[in-house]
Length: 119
Length: 115
Image (cartoon, rainbow over the protein chains, first blue to last red):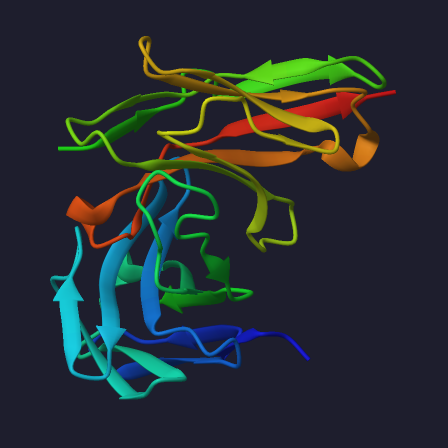
């Protein structure tokens, strides 16, 4: 079984609808992240969480909210979806990073992605 | 602010040849990690190699090596003996404590390996 799972894998929705993307992990990692990928722009950080009580905004958090229901679960919500939120969404996890710049620092493990289309 | 630059939108290489994918970065933090990920057409993100800012030697993982030139702030990925399955998007990324240990990605390089 995959260590990081995302549901749904594909979703088509309409403008104005609320939608939730879910992420679960079995790696036992404390840190979880949501990224968005648009063609030609690489991945950009939406939100990240260090534990269930610590949630932080990323580069492009406007229009999104998150919930860390448990160590293993991190959900991303679009309160009122709009077409320019059409993208590929990735969840990722990492362990406590250890020494910055040192070995095995902060490798992130990605889920398979959710392809979201907002019409 | 951190910035990752990948200047090659697309690259071609012949099977069995070596190829270098460029990555430059900008950060004022002395402690950081540099990563390369592969994204095949199926979409998943596959971790390839990591280089720490304090590492004295260039990282290697099988056919992948990272040419780390700290003074020039470059972290180029070298793929030796290219295979058809290496055709994919390749992303360079950097993380450090200032970014909450999240990764800052470049825009990627599309690599096509030809027979």
